[in-house]
Length: 125
Image (cartoon, rainbow, N blue to C red; front, side):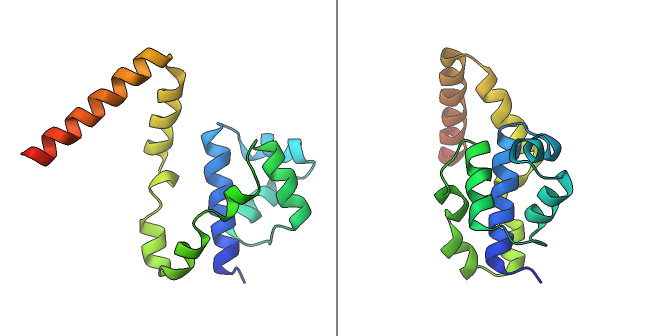
């Protein structure tokens, strides 16, 4: 039975893996396990040991603390609210972030300025 913390760690693992554009298989190879184990971690079916969390953090080029970011808030929300509020787990969001970082610095800055101006226009209207 998955706990809320196991689910949170799994969501954070999936989010980071996707942001880097890695498949479950690619991540599994990096840490020396089978991709099915990554699947189980991501859905919270299996707990991630401290040693394995360290390996995953190294492979995903992030501090271990990344996995615990927002855990307090996540534990305070209901499961339904948590499932609906995972904006960064949406494929559309991930595609947008990946496309954004494929741009050069200047086009990224211009795109960000455009997005901000569109938001300011919506708020003013």
